Amino acid sequence: MTAALRLAEQLIALPSVTPDDAGCQKLLAERLRAIDFDCHTIESGPDDFRVTNLWAVRRGRDPQGRVLAFAGHTDVVPTGPVAQWSSDPFVPTHRNGRLYGRGAADMKTSIAAMVVACEEFVRAHPAHAGSIGFLITSDEEGPANDGTIKVIEWLKERGERLDCCIVGEPTSVEAVGDMIKNGRRGSLSGRLVVKGIQGHIAYPHLAENPIHRLAPALAELTTLEWDRGNDHFPPTSWQVSNLHAGTGASNVIPGEAVVDFNFRFSTESTPESLKARLHAVLDRHALKYELQWTLGGRPFLTRPGDLTEAIGAAIRETTGLVTELSTTGGTSDGRFIAQVCPQVVECGPVNASIHKIDEHVAVADIEPLKEIYRRTLERLAA
Image 1 (cartoon, one colour):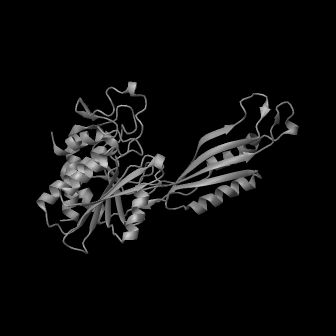
Image 2 (tube, one colour):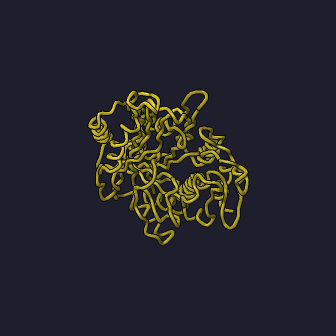
Image 3 (tube, one colour):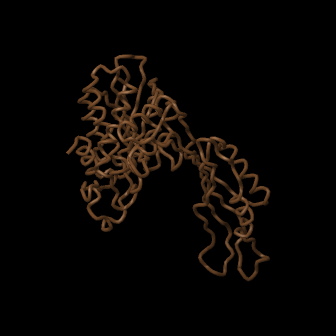
């Protein structure tokens, strides 16, 4: 059994459902301290949702040298019905060349591979020039209010610098390394409450149906071209996630209709421009409404440069693949790291089973993933 596989199994065995780290970061800190990393625990959040974060750094011999950070999360999503799993989700299990367990793909295998890659790199280059950091949180799968964003604030206060960051999100599609993310779209959500007048369905002239008032505006919003995207991002999309109205009775016109929606937006749009355009549609249709906005994250982009070239070369040497740069998918903690780090990419295992029953990774993918991280270190930190 390889060191990366063994560590991945140890992490999977710890039931770290958000925000409970369940001892994962303690295990990681022990490994990192053994190779001279300075480790700091940063706790945040209320007592009933306490988040644990780890920042660890090993200083290189060159104070002005590049700082390369690895980032990830030890928290996992809930298992879902345990009876539907083929094996206990927190007992790492091997079947048909796969390692099963909650967090196997998202993203305990990545973290294990990163740590072992650093161990091997430090043994080979004890006096490396660049510095290496680890930013680990237990609040990526949750609200993300007390996780990576708090560590970034803490690093800013200390004057810490990050030049490059590799986030271990599961980005591969068919084979490890075939795709990495060099950016992510922004996320802007809204809850729209359209006001009407409740009344008896047999006397519509005494009521005002908010669904009927909303329908033309909703139809227009679904056909709008918000932007055309660009060379790195697909066009901005707008989608309704929930629509609710009514009291449950079939003879009552509802007094209000509630719509939850979300923009996934490119760098061609801003939260301000999207809000303004949506409000303009609602106002043009003379709706009476309330609207609450939540900005989940702004888009970020790492253009081809030192980091993408280094990790691309590492993937090519390890797997023979020419990786694809992509900005598709959901949000990640890269949106916070990009506030202080000019180059952020995400690279991890195949993502087909993430958040599913019987989450797994191919055992044969673990060593190549570790090699990709190690070879990137060779290029950027040696």
